[in-house]
Image 1 (cartoon, one colour):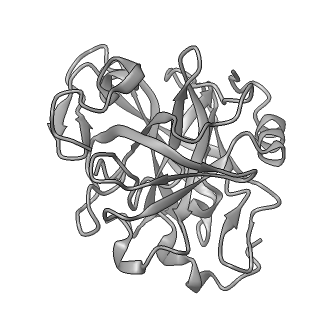
Image 2 (cartoon, rainbow, N blue to C red):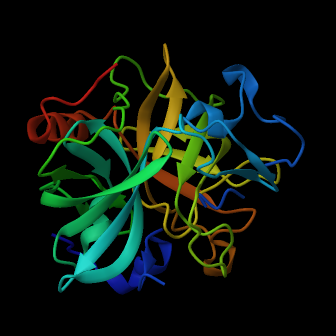
Length: 282
């Protein structure tokens, strides 16, 4: 339950409301930000074709092999679409996302997957919100995670949760989502992905900063994962909000700072595994 005035926080939550980046907002040179991953961000999350754009990659469905654990969540209110978030498949019937995506909703969603070049929609069977989801006195969300369970198994692959180590400051990761590509743009049909660098790590959050040659989340990317390399990609954090220190007119712009709920926080990981004991871990 939120115990702080949500009006103070709402503009910093990266859910796209009213169904209308990643603001895949880095460099436009080929594979310039691939770092140690050795491929485009799209390829890393399961897409064969990359459409190069400024500050990220558009990952269109263009091949029968296109298959990803990154999914679009159509948030439902009174049975109708009311917003867009991003999630990651962690088991055949479980999707990891952000708790704040379901504030004021039916606690229900359509899960839209991409498998073998086709999209398939699954209705949620249940949505579990972390019981400790709240906001601090300085308007920082904590325990901002939720699990969407589907009534039937999804064919999308599961991405493991990173539990064996902490994220490291200066480490490069992948951000991906179905959010806007700029503050005023519409919600895209395709997922976008790009590279970003971990700027700080605390017990509860991992922070990335929007630099001119890196990618960054925007509205619609709430719930999307920060993916780090650990014998393959693993989920280190979940998009929660822009840091309260960021001016409102800087959100989704260079200078933005996004807080990810850390999966290495035992209060978060224990909740996730209690609701989805079949979740992949690494």
